[in-house]
Image (cartoon, helix red, strand yellow):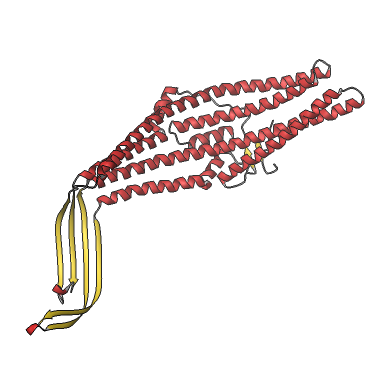
Length: 442
């Protein structure tokens, strides 16, 4: 085995790592903030349809003089010193305003797109933490294989050196084994660096340095899907989050076009104003006034320098672009569903084939060692058989992890929340009886 079977109750399993990523990961926190901003857009757009109340108050101290003609052409001048106050409150309620209604529809579409985008970000975060978790397992297995290979070759070099003293080993066999040993040591260092890098990537997403994690159960394999490809593609067309986001982008562009076109239309507002003034000007000096007006204000656009025509043309092209991108997304989702469906189904067969290859490689190594001991095989045959065994074991685990990754990719494509699939995979393949990988000592 490439990993120890000692159990550690505190070992991190896949589901625990997934939960930690949703608590710590900065990208997901940014997605939550982006979702909040998208939801606020609905209220921002709706505000244009609600009553608008404004108040103004002024308090001025006026100092000056006033001149007026008197008798016999003599100008009379008098000083002016008084306080002027004015309080004004206005209520404006849109009654007929197509641009603001179109803007409200755009805000609703932006909010709906926010839900779809948040689901996309959740799926990406889930797939990324699973991929990082699997990368640690693969890197550990690679490192263990290279270490075992180096130890095997070291023992063989020692044995040849002893035999050479008795003239029972050739210089060629010793040189071949030493060369492979040097290569195995170099590969072991490379694999260790890869393991440390994979561990850091997982740490960056979950916020803690994992000391140990659960590895794959050795006796449990993935099962073929019982649902057909056509059913999955139909489900994806209805529930795929990227398709939903692309559809809302079409609605946003449609609302933007309606907004642009409605600039040609008149708008009608109900306006009510209440005012209270004291010595507002010279004509009302030392007079207090209270006013209240209610009326309907109609605004008719006449000419805006070609702005409305240009912005309508721009919005129309943006709508066409959004519609084309939506159709492109439909085709891409169909293709992706078919790809991951086939990869998952064929991946199960590849796992079975890799398992047989692993067993055959072990038999080949045993056979080559026995044949070499009786002179029926060369030392190079034994070294090649050992390399093949190490590669077969690594490819076997890689195939098993790829199948699980493809299953989650497929679940994401058909619009499923990955919470339950990740939990099910963790409980089935990374349970309490799973081997534990100790990373603290690496």
